[in-house]
Image (cartoon, rainbow, N blue to C red; front, side):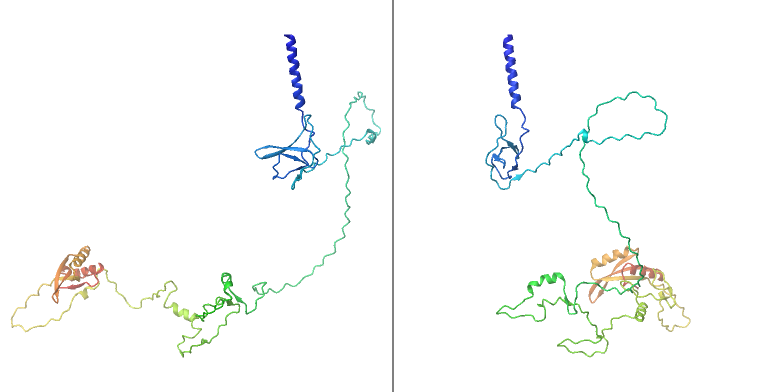
Length: 396
């Protein structure tokens, strides 16, 4: 059993050593000198140094791995792959070189000057010498800087007092020079008519309108301002009408302070204009709203004729006053008469419907009453008129 165990341990040790030999790193190898373009789909690539690289990667991430032999040496010496658009690797900056000064080149240390007469120092323990590592120093290069020249003294400044310019009137400033005959047109009109400037009548046709509606320049105005003249100009083909009433006066629309004062005496300045309320210059009498006539006007003064009576005859007593009615309206339609009666009854008046005949045609009459007192009759008439019966009147 011991011999078998020794043999097994030897086999395990040999296998472990072989695995360690095959797992050595590839750090001495270098990446490709240039990379193929993204359109290259080959599985093998040879750079300009002749070294062989194999495509590797997962999910579209391409990595070029150097091809090695069984002894884990990179394979080189092949013909480079001729491709257009290869990308060269950026060269790495060289590591800075460190220079170590020899002990003979190091500067000597200067001793501090001995102080003047002083008390002798106390005895100190012997110094301990410790070995220190020599520091590495990096050589520094001193750059020569140009010495700036001395600045010349500034010249003396002379103060000159200038007269302030006279302010000029504000005028529109423009870099475009325009002549008085320059035509001006809106931009969108100019853009729309650019293709219609060369309008020509096709063969076999004749123009229909000659009044300017087909003129592409009709919407253009001149820069020269219009000159307003006091005389009316008669267009060609028309005759001047002799009128002296001022309707042809070009200055008739201008206002004057005197005219504005006259207008303010009649109309106000609001919108719409209203008549100016003038103060009353006559005595007035106010009547109640429920009575349109005064008690004196309500009494009728009729003409009475006196007849000769027998001597000794007793004068008859005055007959009782006849009742009065308020005649609101007359309708030919019975339904309209009943509707008007209901409307009048809503005011609190006693309403009746009567019938009259005119030229053989019956009519319905809406009346209110009767009233024995003239004042009550006048008040009822006022209520009927306020209810909308403007044609109401008193009757017997």
